[in-house]
Length: 265
Ligand code: GLP
Image (cartoon, rainbow, N blue to C red; front, side, top):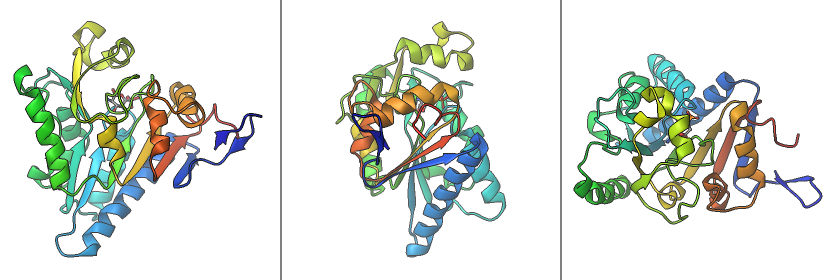
């Protein structure tokens, strides 16, 4: 629902769906079940069929990964899944407690059976001179996998997606970026203090993200209410990277009641 000039809600772009859930848990379960259906669908298509998922980090998807681990205990196999994470800090050691590499192992990879060579996270430990090559290789592996079928996304407090900060180009590809001060402040907790947060990151570009066949955006909590409103109802602009998702053909926006609280009923 986009706002008309008179403030009345008008429909979202066709192919977009808004799913409001009462709680963060219900929103996470909804997303995990959606992902599970995609995995099962691709496993069933043909022998060797593979589900290619784009994955996100941050606090938002933790409930989704918990639920996926639970579904795995109940029998859901990830043997036919290949994953590509959105981003990673740079520079950072793979085993740094706050690295996204480590996060993904703890939250998902060590709890399900995605084959080892099928889990891709940008490598924040590559030397500066090798970043460009690494980023190009990352794009090439996504292409080799046949492209991302379903991309899971959270939204940064300033509207960033992946680590594409406001002002990032709509057509951007995987590359090194400079983190905004707000992003470093938002993520200070994991590093102890803001000065310890790396100044850069390697992230899929907005163009890479928009190439995914379908996208699921998950937003949870009051602190996301204003940016969710801007992404869904404000102008479509590179100043609010999440608003660019409205140019994609198939997006599920999954919100808990708090994240949806600034939207018209
Ligand atoms: C992080 C990640 C994003 C994530 C966002 C929101 O910095 N790079 O991919 O969506 O910020 O984080 P959180 O879910 O903790 O609010």
